[in-house]
Amino acid sequence: MTSSENEWGSNLAFILAMIGSAVGLGNIWRYPYVIYSNGGGAFLIPYLIAILVMAIPFLILEYGVGYNYKSSFTKAVIKLNPKLEFYGWILPVVVFILTIYYSTIIGWDGIYFVLSFVKGWGSDPNTFLSNTVLQSSDSINGIFNFLPVVAISMFVGWFFIWIVSHKKLDEGLGRISRIFVPILFITMAIIVIFSLTLPGASIGLAELFAPDLSLLWHFDIWMAAFGQIFFSLSLGLGAGFTYASYTKKDIDLITSGLYVIIANCAFENFAAVGVFSILGYMSLQSGTPVADLVSGGTTLIFVVYPQIFNVLGVLAFILGPLFFFTVYVAGITSMLSSFEVLSISLQNKFDLSRKKATTILFIIGSLASMIYATSSGEYILAIADSFVNNIVVVFSVIIECILFAWVFKAEKLVKFLNDRSHSLKLGKWWLILVKYIIPILLLVIWIGGLNEILSEANFEFLAILAILFAILFILSFIFAVIKPKSENWYKTEERIK
Ligand code: PHE
Image (cartoon, rainbow, N blue to C red; front, top):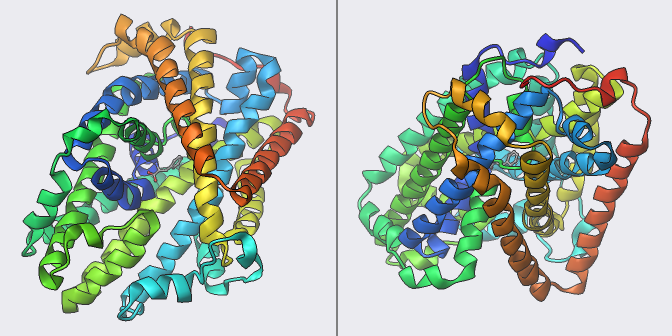
């Protein structure tokens, strides 16, 4: 493996790729709904606190340690403690599980991109989505009903991932980020500015930001804020770690991290403003209150948007494709980063070239993702999402805090990061946050979340959860016990002395 195969051409490429990773489906389909259903304007309080207390300090820690080891997450964990190799594989494997279901939503979006040119969803987008596109069954029974159109669309997304990631880092991922991330912001700006000019936009915005302060006393809204920030910023999932490990010497990681956080959070709040302006317009047209038009996650973009485009007339033929294209690009640039995490661990351990590792993962990932191209796809996806985000990742970040802040010693990073920083300087406050406050806070959130999930779970849900755990543990175990091909597997240099 040559070093140029895995190094950014410039620091800007790193920042753009990281923004590409952060800005994704979470910002467009998840955030508008999350803020609305968690107290509107009041949600911004826990949201800002989550950014200040957790996102900024943890992102800096993740970048710093990734930079230091200039290697995969797994290899860094082994260097910290060789007995922890099994855990070192858990995170990359779980992120690969995320990649697989993430590809499904990108696949759905691909279908809607094509449909948007002719408003192919007809006059009842809700029925169209569940009966025609997904043929949804809300149990495991639909697993043998294969959906070829969804499968093809998903495969196209996977193919695109392979095309980009099998090339040398800067020629593939670097170039795509330099082109697509600016495009993403431009198309989103066009959509938002247009939405704001619609009659009724202010009705939607008033509804969105109407602060329901009483909700601040509920545990849920805090959990929702921390969960959103995690997913949206790709925190603790190894993406930031991996991308930072590809940076050149002397990068200002603190300022880069702040840019990523600002860009991501601005993007998702603009997206929410756009969505709710359009909902306000629709509410004015149809006389239906905004509250009745909003729905959760997936359906918001595949049901509400088509409904909007239906009432928009000819303009929808421009705005529709533009919107689904924006979602597509946002999704692909995020999936590229989650795909990267397991890929680089395999490259390191088995001495595989980038080309070989990405090709193997492309084949395995695209085949495994076919489970979602069935009538049970949407149902399993929701469980997999909960498994990854509420159960494994939060817990994994607690371990990361212990490993990075305590075992590695976050103190070692302070001087290095501060010397290069043109903005924020780290002080004692940072060490207190990453060593004590973040892990304790996350433990509380993790227990609270687990409690909630288990109290609502039925047998089938638990069975699927158990299967996911089995897959995660077995794969991680196999990767951990196979003998390394690379002589350097147990030898990792450190860049920060
Ligand atoms: N941040 C991405 C989003 O908002 C999701 C993601 C998580 C991507 C982890 C890569 C790694 O959609």
